Length: 451
Ligand SMILES: Cc1cc2nc3c(=O)[nH]c(=O)nc-3n(C[C@H](O)[C@H](O)[C@H](O)COP(=O)(O)OP(=O)(O)OC[C@H]3O[C@@H](n4cnc5c(N)ncnc54)[C@H](O)[C@@H]3O)c2cc1C
Image (cartoon, rainbow, N blue to C red):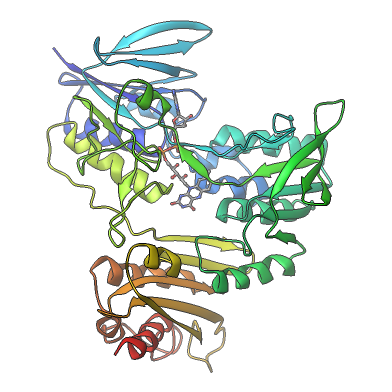
């Protein structure tokens, strides 16, 4: 008889695993059933700010594979199904659909429940015009509100990349936007000096920044909607509020079932994505992973990891061999005129992890300085003073700057020293960069400090 693989969560982690498992096992061997509480599967959450801003006009374009298309490929997708409990002893999950509860059996279980936006318990937080942003359904709610209520003022709470992408999207919709951020610069995944460049880019498109300022609460009217956001002695007018305070792993189902959850709040797995419970795997934003430079357990919410972990789970759940090797936190975003990218450790992370970091910052260009279309780029490289090992890199620059982070990431992943990286055989011609590419230049400069 066919074994039954049950998946909770129908996006990147869950459906990648489903597709991989289906390629490796036919329906006579393995039945695959995926439960998703919203109406969508396999969508690009990363594209939501562009849907809100109008760069992408049709939400369907963000859906890589619909429930019907999954079904056509032999994966039984049940949308509108909320999994509310796991009964590991009886090998069943508890599901609510159309208002009624029932149980579904499994032989193999994959938890791919993603993450949920942080929603602080502040006065007024339940107001109807305060939005978190995680699923396509959230993005559609925000777009509907923009189209029907035409808000004049928006406040984005939190200056991480999702908050800033949303700030830019709202500006594109003609909304006046204020960003409130508790620390002194936006993009706290960068060091403060690099975040300052991002702040300038936001101000240049008219975003009002309130840095070093924490939100205390929301003023609501009799209609149940927010009219202002309170931050210190300021009341910022708001017809819509977007929460960009980061996300936390959606690990409650696992925790309640006695599955080990780590200090970061993510489900603990081994490198094959197996949890502490027999026959139960987890993948995507709901898990915690090992940072290859700091050695720490971290929860970093990125689609790149969810896809890779889903692939590993799909293989190992079907008795194959695959390993998720850990992360170094490589990420990129477009914030206004700038491409903003980072990898590895910031200086403060490096210090916490026991390194003695030194850093160098270079200003360069994306093409040879004399070549038409050369754009400015700032690169920061961080290395360990004692060993010269590269620990981190950050890039802020215009078109053509950001993806250079991937070269730095490969160097950091492979534990290269700054000197080795500076001498790497990288390509050069004037339309593509200076003879010392900006990343090699930054590595060379930091290598001089550790030599
Ligand atoms: C606005 C935005 C922009 C982003 N941009 C980028 C980017 O540029 N680059 C990048 O690498 N990453 C980006 N990300 C992060 C990326 O989208 C996530 O890391 C990725 O989607 C995680 O995939 P996942 O499958 O683990 O979780 P999710 O995509 O969150 O999917 C989890 C699914 O599980 C469902 N679910 C949860 N609990 C239950 C339950 N109990 N029962 C049934 N269903 C349930 C949810 O409805 C959801 O559909 C972005 C995220 C957002 C929100």
